[in-house]
Length: 448
Image 1 (cartoon, rainbow, N blue to C red):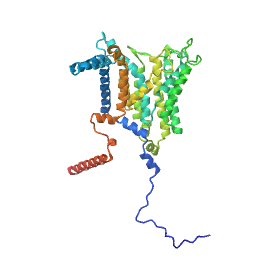
Image 2: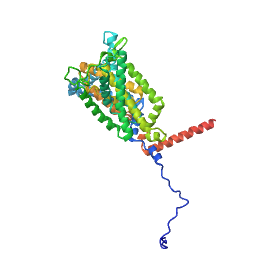
Image 3: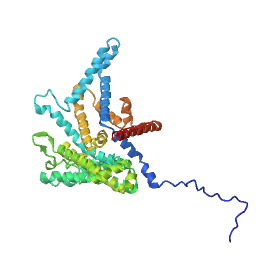
Image 4: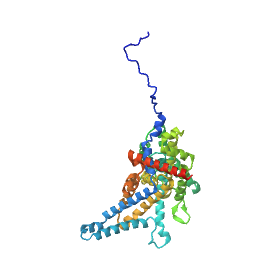
């Protein structure tokens, strides 16, 4: 039955032909513009220049020097009569800081008081020994950072790598030419699978990688702690202590010819650094990884499979952490390991990757710096009675300053980035740049 329109009701208004009907913004365009918070934070941190990095390290050393002076007994005694003889306090503070950092240098780089050249460069060999696993794990964290992922699970990946290598290869008794690469391959593969598990869960379920990696750290720790208590699995025969079998001699990394203090771990991390540099900066897969790290929505719009890139990134990240674990059990700790075999390397590697701006060679040099801090902390304590915790404070301050580029720019009066300016300031800056570009184009036209 048809319903007659009410003659008294107002006629429906027709749209004005002069006013265009607004069209909703396509969802794809909105998603491209909305960069995830984690990607924005990492991009801001990793885009800091070399000057910011040097200033961050310098500022951390300055604060560390202040702490050394404040905790020195001679400085504390001289400060009691500071207003009577201020130079005594200043001189004592200078002696404390200079002595501390002098011991740090002589214990990590070169000991000029050594009787021969081999003894003089031994501190450098100690630095490289501490730096090798840090560099390997730091490279893994850096690869994840370039894709916009926070891999906090290097510790668990190292533990699983060590457990898998010990379980599969320690009882094979193969020649060294086979045992060494086989142990390396098994450990790297196990670390890659443990990291790849995070990538799969992230890609398929959307679970956050920080939660996944932290929880898998606990799983790996308690799993390895249980395995080293079971004689049928990893426990050393004839022992009641929770410790694994020792690394067989044929499975240990060989020493470098003419350098008994260094082994093949150092060339391995150099090769790993070259591989990561090529992978991220030169390969087509690296291009897709960097695109996802900049903006996963834009990468998806360009036809890149973001979930697949997440899986690849975590596979590489876990494999490099597994390499760090192999260095630990094939070079550093060969008498057996437990759930603490990572020795804090998994978390320190995050600092190394941040300091290196997640670049391959930047991470390499940052690992050497932290290896030097670790090697030099022991002479500082032995010769100058400076607590090792001071070095840990310096490392923590480096993280703080690296993770807060605006703080560095404020302290040293450096120009701000565009993202730190107010909208009005950004508009004025854009107007000045446009005027300058127009002026330069006019000058070129006149010259032509």
